Image (cartoon, rainbow, N blue to C red):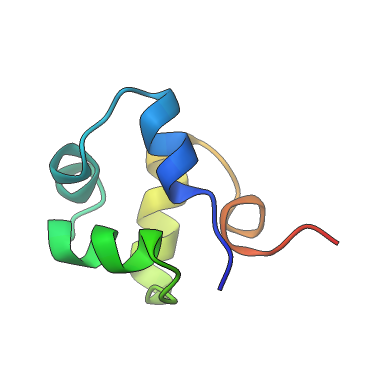
Length: 63
């Protein structure tokens, strides 16, 4: 699965641990997502709220 989580996190100068805390998940989950693993719906929603970007923009590949 393609996503831009890492790009958004770096743009905001945020560590994986900070993102995990804000998204109510673990750093290990963030690592897996950044490597391309599909997140749960709840985690995807939380990440989109942290960055104020839609889930589709983060997790769906550009056509």
